[in-house]
Length: 139
Image (cartoon, rainbow, N blue to C red):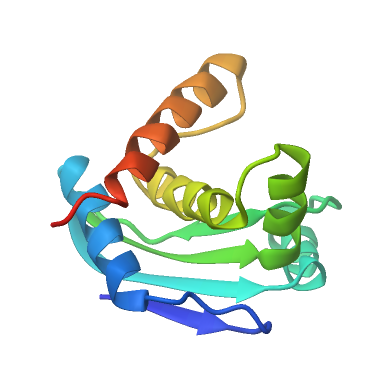
C-alpha cells in the first residue's frame, strides 16, 4: 500500500495516478510493494529529522527510512516541499517534474541505490530519469 500524508498546504492532485506510477516503478525494479508512506512537510521538519536521526545539520529534499525486507519494498519517505520548490527553480524544471524526481529517488533508495559517490549519483540520475518517463505511460 502507498499512502500520502500532508503536513503543508501542498497536496498531489491525482493520488491514484501517483500510486499507479509508483507501483509500476516498483515492478520495473522487480520488487513487491509492502507499505510506503510519503510525508510531505517543511524544510524545518526534514532538517529536524536529519539532525535527530542522521546527525546531519543540513537541509535536504528527502529522507528515506528503509524497511525493505528482501524484495518486499517498504519505507517512510519524508519530502521537503520547500526544498523541492527551490530545486525546481535552481534547475529550471517544472515543480511537478522535480517532485516526481524526488519521489522516484526515495523508491530507488529502497532498492539500495545510493548517491554518495560521483558514480552513484550518475546511476541514480539515470534511474530517476527512466522512472519519471514512466509517469505518463498508462498502466
